[in-house]
Amino acid sequence: MDKYPLITQKRADYELFKQAFELISRKEHLTTKGLEKLIAIKASINNGLSPALKAAFPSIIPASRPLVLNQEIKDPNWLAGFVEGEGNFLVRTQKSKTTKLGESV
Image 1 (cartoon, rainbow, N blue to C red):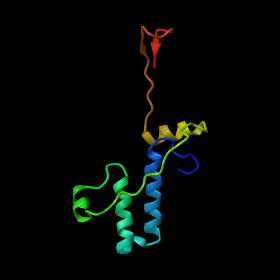
Image 2: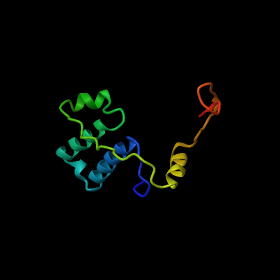
Image 3: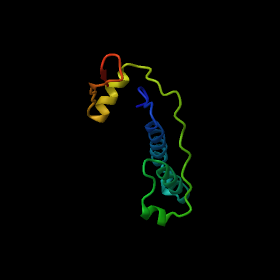
Image 4: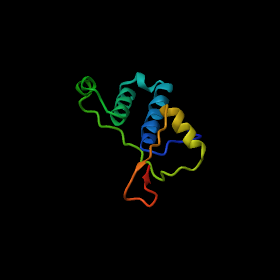
């Protein structure tokens, strides 16, 4: 993932996931402070905390999400990774009265 990084906002989720993984690898999650850090990271990823986690940790402040800047494809292999990761890639054309070629993608 680091060799061909994500270039969308999913990169922020990945960076947060890496932080959580490293925290667990260092066994910090076994302390109260470390567990709270882990829950704060979870609060910032995807759909955030479940209702049960919100109830169990009401004072958790979500971790800061990393900014994802410079979202351009730098390597042609990125597309291959995107297709592999998503399982498919679809391009569809249709008739168009507003384009010069009469087709749009």
